[in-house]
Image (cartoon, rainbow, N blue to C red; front, side, top):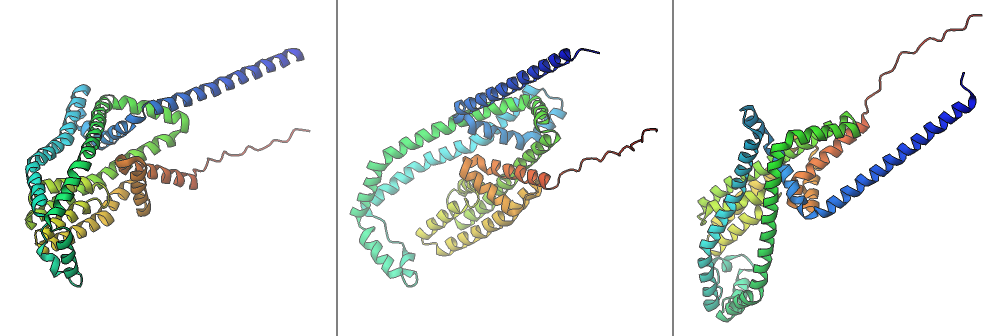
Length: 376
């Protein structure tokens, strides 16, 4: 038997080692938290680019898996997919810029006509019930005179155009920078994605156990389902309304359809385009075509935003309809455009954690051992 003093000394040594280990763990945790906070602060301007890269990588990952099955190299796959997405994102913007450059002369001529002749009174204005004559009289007195158009156009050209051009230039430079870093991060995600996911799974298993990987899968599924619900439905709205623009006789129906598809990714964003097109038709005295276009666009947007889009998103995320809407609008309000995809994913993980907490897995019950009575 060891002496009592020796056992007490061993206990003190074990206690001291335990305290040292706890202190090291706390210090390491604090260091990790500090480094994470400093990194977030340092990369704050680039977080949207990283978020967009993650969203695009999740959405197009099945294409990467198809190329991997064809035994193509990792770097070649990353280069091919990045260039394809760059073309998909940049080419429409170049087309819009070219069309805007072509229309610049038309807009300049329109402004010169307004400066010289004023805003002509639309023929349909006087035919409106109850208020048509009053509106036409007010229009003739305030907008149809040449001096009114000259004052308005001069005010726009002199005071607002310079600041507007400067603001647009700064915003365009910021968007181009975000796009470049998004494509750069996307390339590395395509190339090193499997290794990153393996390491992330190991970390989540260490921190949260098997439920961490399950929540990660729910997050990925929610992002992919949201992209299907927003992007695909937006493209469908753009196609349908582009056909309607062509039937209504609007110029550049493809360009307007593309703008509708882009804005349709934001819930209730498509009406901005087709209502503006309807107003253009009204100014051109095409009242029937304007009413028909606005009515058709309203029906398309109502069906898409209230039925098709929530079904696509909630079907892949198992989210109730209310949480889908809250995730979309809350994410848009908090994170901007990328929040459209992150919001439903965050809500999906939150709802799944709620379900796990409300239905915990019962621990297996071990068979009890019979206690033997000591022999007398």
